[in-house]
Image (cartoon, rainbow, N blue to C red):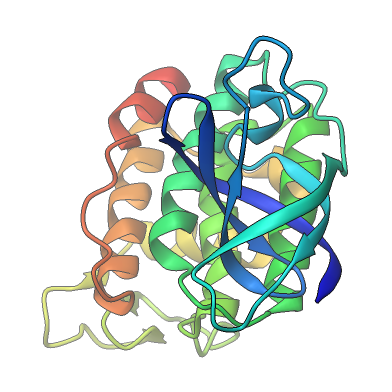
Length: 241
């Protein structure tokens, strides 16, 4: 059957001399793998640049429920990214978020709300002028809403701690070692509440940003099976420092 769908590029793997297998998070079909022939040829119909991490696509695809690798009938850019490919900070954030998404999204069923969140976030990052250094933190917190471990008790007052294991704010220190304490809890809650709309007003030191990122990655590792280490973390922190 033929399907029209938007898609987000997650991973590209060379296949043979001229072809690639591209893993996409699609709006209508979830995570799917597609073979594209001739990409590495000089006069390829599909440009390799179109398949860069988190590029946004419009597709017409063939889909067989019994197939592990599908085929694409038509492909074009859904949005032309004007800044991410040429801005080192934005491209580093994109590479980092791509690795997060590749490890966190595994379902071969559609999740259109999650798709819209990621698609819109990439568009926003491409056009963002201020608050770029905190974008990845806000993105990761927002993504947890769709992954099933969004923080609870956000509006509770005088909450000094955030329990990473249970995903709740608390007035008492958790029994486990997985928690945020003052002043980090307040900064984390600020990122959560302010979101994208007030990125430029969130003021964090480099040290605090690095600390919150390390704990956010710990939060993901606690709740996403097989999450493991993120190789692009060091590069991102160096670029944003």
